Figure 1: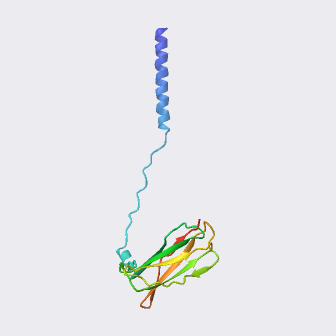
Figure 2: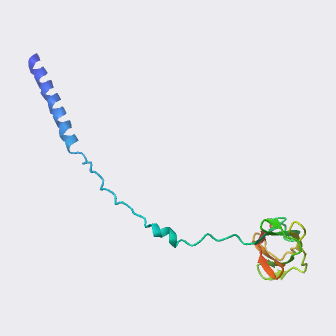
Length: 157
């Protein structure tokens, strides 16, 4: 009887191992990925590229003294004109404010100082609704050339 139990255990063990081998054989098949096509770039490709643009001679930018002013406050709009990175003096500047309902051209037409800077005083007088951005375009004129600046902006709070 003892011999019988041992034989049954051995047969059961062999049956389980065989079952495991059969299950493992039914697993997913590993496939080799297909070979990738070789990419060839025609050397004439680079000849078709457009040339890198040159930086403009004159550049300018404008900014506000306060980007979140009160609706009835007065802010200053600053601008700077450069030529080949040096400040340009003697250029006349004009500024136009773009409010929600109208545009206002500022009366002052300052001339840039030796560093290329000008400034404009802008009394807001509640012309722009709260939390609605407004922009200010500044242009410089020097020797018959007009240069448009990147605009200044502010949002009344």
